[in-house]
Length: 281
Image (cartoon, rainbow, N blue to C red):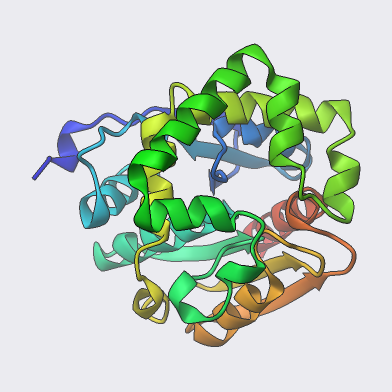
């Protein structure tokens, strides 16, 4: 079994130079480049942003060992605040669980457009990413081949990859797919994830499709859920399931008219303002 203590995990920082630290778990595909979507709000509210370069962990870090290593890489100072987007929300939940088992106190956990366990309901048939998740469950070699092709597209024809990944976009995400600033960051995150970060991308997918529903009720952290009403990547039923099964859910906000990425971009300001308010109190 690999030793998590032997890994010096790089961390990307953004936001304010001082203040409350928020550890952000990026989406899948995605990378720490997503901090650029948080940066302006974090600076306004005096929030430091951290993103763990989790794809840098070797491929043999899997299951419990993987999440223990992420928990060990969290800031040692308190209070500890975490946020996760999409499947990054799943990674944040698993990491929070491991951190709490190690005696850490998670002051707040913010889950945006987060994907719930597949075994918890009839979710998969409603998800735009259904073919990828089915490959992660049953056809690993095919998934690897698809990822190699997508990585090539990300390097050579990034606009084509974006059109492919956003082909099923709806509502606010369809608008974002046509915005150059959003697409510039998205393409950078996709390229990072599907090339240098491919090991981490595949690991996160494979970990996500494993059963993990029983773990959710063990998480003690005060948790806020933010979810778009038009999300077709993480259907709203997932948010309702998490709300019921999280022991300390402080609220679910269904963001009207927003889809997957639209929910994230519309709520980074709110999350940062909550952190600023908690520090002030």
